[in-house]
Amino acid sequence: MKGYKYKINECLHDLPMKDYKRAMKIIPKVLNISENTFHNYRNIQIGENKDIPYEKVRKLEIIFGLKERKLENYRIESKTIIQLLKEAPFD
Image: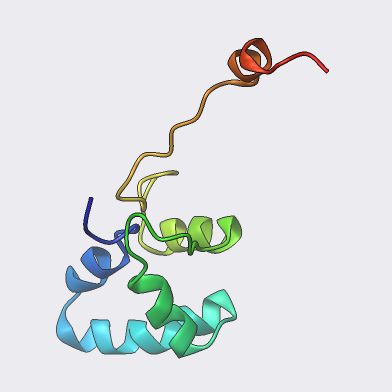
C-alpha cells in the first residue's frame, strides 16, 4: 500500500496559500518540534516503521479540526488480548 500515513499534507493543501506558508511555521512551534521534524512527519509513508508520537497526532487533529483518529490514512489492526492468549502456547 502506498501513500502517506497521515493526512497532514491534505489538511495543509486545503488552506489558502498565504495561510499554508504561515501554518508551516506555526505548527512546528505549537508541537514543540523543528520544522525539519514536521517535514518528516508529513512524509511518513504507509508501511514505514516511523510514526508520530500519539500526543503530537492528537494535537494535529485538534489543530486541523479533525475528530480523533481522522488524521490517519491507514487502519491499525490487531488481535485482542483474549485472542492472543488463546493462541499463545502454555508456559
